[in-house]
Length: 166
Length: 84
Image (tube, rainbow over all chains, first blue to last red):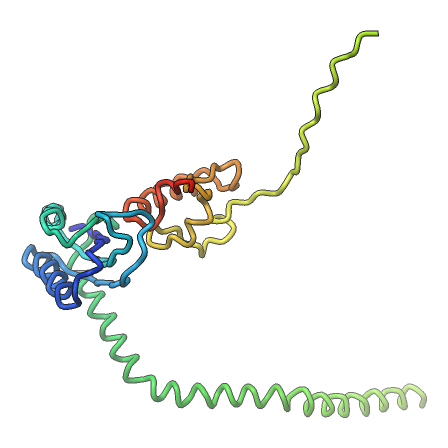
């Protein structure tokens, strides 16, 4: 299994529904071929650096997935066929991805995220108090301990001096 | 008295310490998906800035060119900027 990433430039005039059905179709292709879709990023409509198919703008979609090389060729075939795809670029990110290990990782991440989602209330509750404590301390700390130290230090020095004199 | 051919004018040389930016700061990830970083290494006309100018090390320059070329392919960077 290999990890790929495809950037697809879609027609900017498509409706959200059409884009939804297209991304759905691609994720279906990935799943039916035994691959795994890791993420879809929608970069929104961006200005193109040069005119493509007489359009100044394009809708960028990033697909990140794991699959066999045949999956890539099938996806690229679909990109070529569909009129909505103006341009695409596929990049191999990794050879020899262990899909099961990857899924396990994804699950762990999901669990970690879920845990993170559950914990934030306590973290947020504790964090501000810590911050406050920290902000309080530096304000007080330099003022209070320093005099205390000097107060302690001075008598000691004075005693030593007295002893020395005696 | 024959006029001597004037000494070839010394080229003014500004020695500048050039450090590969990607070696200096490993946190900069060059990626074709981030054209803003790559844009620092192309000229106004869209050409890739040579290594002797940019000061990149060979390894990073090689990576950079492939990333710029990928970015060009998906219209994030221009192949050329036509003069108007």
